[in-house]
Length: 221
Image (cartoon, rainbow, N blue to C red; front, side, top):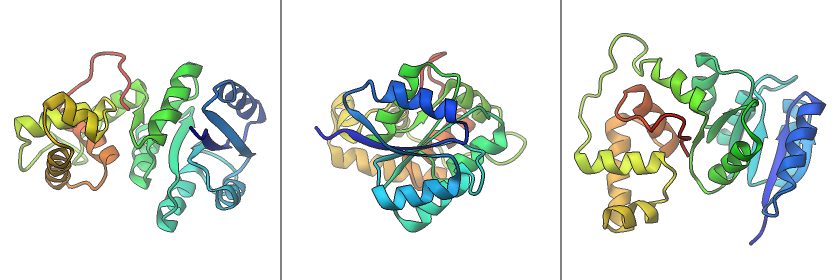
């Protein structure tokens, strides 16, 4: 299998060095280039078209959130993993709202960041447990008790919980003994009810609405 090609952007050289070293110990991950600011990150992404961009939130030039918005507006098929020291609600919601596929804290263990890179590469969502707690403390409707106008069916709830645990459509289908096409149909209904358009947004909003909670310490992917 071809390695997961990564661009790494962080304005702290020591942080970049540390992340690069443990990523490149993995046979299936290759760091193509590094950037110390958001504008350089954009240039490198355009040049290399990586599979995954690892971005810090605060960088000189464009922030990690701005780079993510630019990526989505450009339609580039690059997965985004935010690796940062900031777990404040405005940063978390802005990054995920911009289209980031994962959000992990810099103090996470090396194997957790490696797992997050693999997860977002495979189209899954990677959320640090700290981020999950932040989302759960922030009502989805901006204040008061969160409201879901049309509830999820029991099967839709099961599909969403399995998606939050990182299962692919095929994996969800195997777990529930239904076809991939049926899983896609359930996900489409879930997106409509939650008023979202991606799996990441669905998981994020479901956490905010407290539709489910993974066991303590379990990482969402």
